Amino acid sequence: MFVGCGSDDGRATVRGSVTFDGVPLDAGVIALVPEPGSSGLAVGGVIESGSYSIASDGPLPGKYMVQITASRKTGQMVEQTEQYIPAKYNKNTELIVEIESGSNRCDFELSSAG
Picture (cartoon, one colour):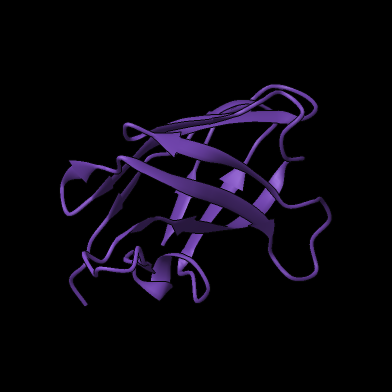
């Protein structure tokens, strides 16, 4: 999956929404990791009530792999949590975005389906 975003000059700001199975993601983390062979540093932000924002000292323009994670309680007696976002959205991400300088909006609609 490839999503294009924004335009201007210099470092970028990135904001957007994240849904999981059609519902805004209550809480989680989003990371933008430069694709192999590209310059830049990994950056990230917190997802709250389905929205995230990465400030003006965010990523340099370029292509980034997107990793989205979220945990929830398992309901066991001993408080445990589990990663419930499928690996194709984080450690084995299939999400790629092109960040341009300036302001970018990148929305992600995740699904638990295959």
